Length: 350
Image 1 (cartoon, one colour):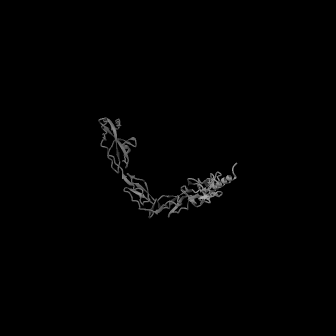
Image 2 (cartoon, helix red, strand yellow; image 1 turned 30 degrees about the vertical axis):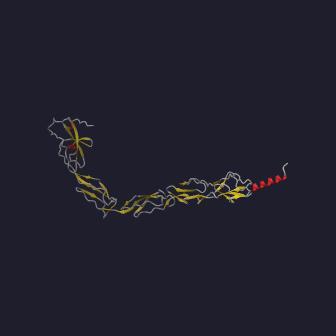
Image 3 (cartoon, helix red, strand yellow; image 1 turned 45 degrees about the vertical axis):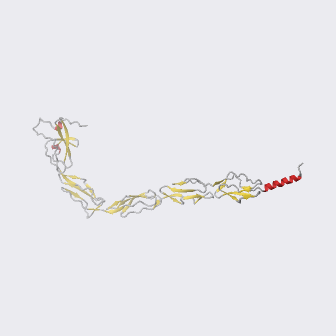
């Protein structure tokens, strides 16, 4: 039988041992705050874990703990996870740049070309789980009605939004008569909300065209000739116009061409078969009145060694016509001689 004195003494020792046990400073939980925070706690004292702003508890972990007589804190399963803001990964006519939508991350916004940010360029996920500032929108860039250059009219222009234009819309201008355009006749609405560089309309005058030798020129009967005015040229008999029949006053203040009259050629050959525009013709018949400037024929010549024929070109150049040296004109009485045009063609070297 145990002595009552022994039992009382043992109980005293137990209480002394227990009374000396305290709980240590509690373990830290990421993104959580512990209150009260002390270096040690007496048995029976309570602590409370609270998730910091922007973080919430998930999984049913404990938040309040009491220091037990053993001096060992219970296992803490509390996890504080960041709040998640609403999905913001799509921006119409733009793009969202982000890594995550969790607190306290930032996201940024950019708009496609032709659109601008109406609102903030970045937003932060707040502790309440909302975006701040509010998300922006990408609004279309517009240009005001285009200015009209001096001495010009708008030939093509159609606004897209009321009186305004959208990015890449165009306007086309034309200059009034007598005025020439310098620069692009078409302007565009840019991504910055303004128009590309306007063209300039300048008055352009041309000198009176000079009359060509052996020819004439006609132009409007007025004191001054302006841009786009025209003049026509012609030549006297036996002369050919070298250049266009009609010329125009250009934006540089000169004429688009300076035609001249070239003389015809008198032919010294009395009898020859030649090629003219791909056909065999008798020179003396086809050009009995002479050959016009620029006309070209091909004479037949003999290759005596190979006993074959080949051709060489001759052209009338302003009254001068040189007959190829290889061509031999036979007398009408030399009927026994074969004309070069009747000799088989030489085979071309390949």
